[in-house]
Length: 205
Image (cartoon, rainbow, N blue to C red; front, side, top):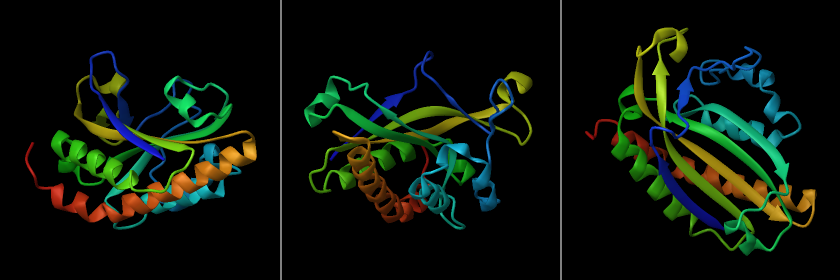
C-alpha cells in the first residue's frame, strides 16, 4: 500500500474552515465529538457503515482528533501515479481531521511530524492495491457561529489534515473491499499514534 503526504499552504491552495456551511446552506459542519447522534445527518456515510464507524471512532470521547468534513465516491479517473496499480477504477474517500487541543491546531511542526509518523507506520502494511494520501492544509478556526465571510480576520489560522483513502480494482466490489482494508489500517494507525498527539500539544513551533 502506498502512503505519502504533501504540504499545501500556498496562497492559492484550498484552506479549510471549522465550523463551515456550504454556500447554499444545505450542508454544514456537525460536531460529532459533542453529539455522535448527528452522524445520521451526514449523507456521505449513507450505505457505508464502515465509514460511519470510522468517523465515530475519530470523534470518540477523549480521542485527540475530530473530523470536519468527509465524502466517498467511485471513480474511473486514474492519475499517472495511480497507474502502478494496473486497475481501471477506484473507490475513494476523504476526511478532514483536526486536533482537539486549540494550541495544537496552530502548531505546524506538530502536524508535519504527525503525518510523517503516520505515513511511516502505514508503509509497513502488507502489499495492497490501495493508497493513503495526507495533505497538510491551512484551516481557519472560527468562533462558534462565525464564518470567514462574516467575521473577516476574526479567526485563528491554523492547520488541519485531509486524508484520502483509495482502493483500486477491476470492479466496484473489489475496489470497495480494498478501500475498506486501507481504511481499517488507517484507523489502527491513527489510534496507535494518538498518544503522540498528546505529547505534541505543548510543543512550540
